[in-house]
Length: 141
Image 1 (cartoon, rainbow, N blue to C red):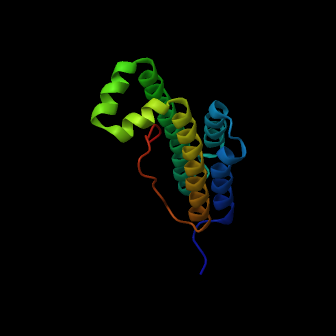
Image 2: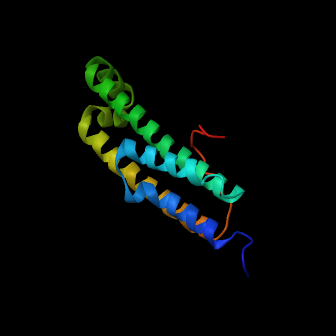
Image 3: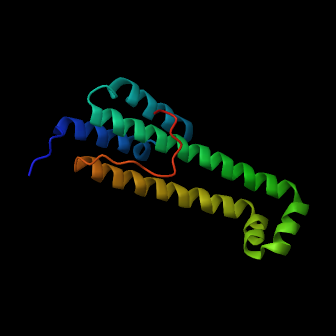
């Protein structure tokens, strides 16, 4: 059974999803994905949808990481807040008290999750599926 989506469009989308995996440099990833979307986003509705989705996924990932690291940094500065959190929510307080190690672990874990999501999106795009990723900030609608 052949899909109504041309192979060329599927390949464009797969390359777009592979860009953040191949070039994992934090701010340049956003730039590479946006430039790719800007130049190839008008190929078809399928390509436009997936490249827009790709940009939103990568941008959301970076925004979530900035917020997470900012929260960890603020908790490490205000030690009295950490003591209050440890008193009422021991597990969360322990994670906040660990500070740098916890943020490093979460950063690596979220990077693996991003790579996994992008690989699944590559497979779904190669099958010609229209997908919508939950929990992303839709900057480009």
